[in-house]
Length: 253
Ligand SMILES: Nc1ncnc2c1ncn2[C@@H]1O[C@H](COP(=O)(O)OP(=O)(O)O)[C@@H](O)[C@H]1O
Ligand SMILES: [Mg+2]
Image (cartoon, rainbow, N blue to C red; front, top):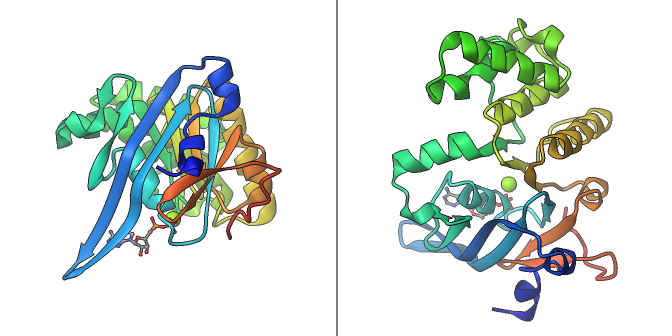
């Protein structure tokens, strides 16, 4: 492990305050194979994220940021290494257990909202609750509260496909958080939005992070947004390195 990636594991502030670990990745490797060709995207990446942190991950396109979030959230499995949430090791879970863990513990927001356009905002937010086995009436009530939480109570009955880009991303946030996860992961959540709407969605994300006591990991190309996070890590050559104001790193585009 390089000195840089070792340094990326423990932020000084967190180590000093003895903060509690929320999740940890150890020796993550990811190799994509197609035919005879193998592409090693992550080369043994380790990182610790502490409870309440909002971590920004930056890096050039194609460096593996989305791959990393998918591994950290259990959406995909690493070629080697593992991810731990407290005592729970994702590699030890079978596919059903992993899906159940994800549904309960992790909220995920993508660059594209992936809402079902023909369904209402409320129905879209109800989905993870119904998947998790809640009764329809309870799901509707919780989804309504989640929409109110993102300022969209008045849009609950609108079809998702008829909402603006910013509203759709808010619905995506409500859907990600309706199950009260402890961790929020967002992959370029403002990447498809104009500057003003992006600013409003990022501010909402920060607000939800604080109000719900979340641990958040956010991939972003937006440098001002990254700077408003607790810590910035840069993915480069398959590993993470810390970015500090003094390091002079280019944050990638
Ligand atoms: N499912 C896949 N199969 C093969 N190659 C992939 C797959 N997903 C991503 N890649 C490749 O892995 C690299 C990293 O991709 P990605 O994680 O999407 O990067 P980023 O999010 O930083 O732009 C890219 O070269 C991409 O083409
Ligand atoms: Mg990506």
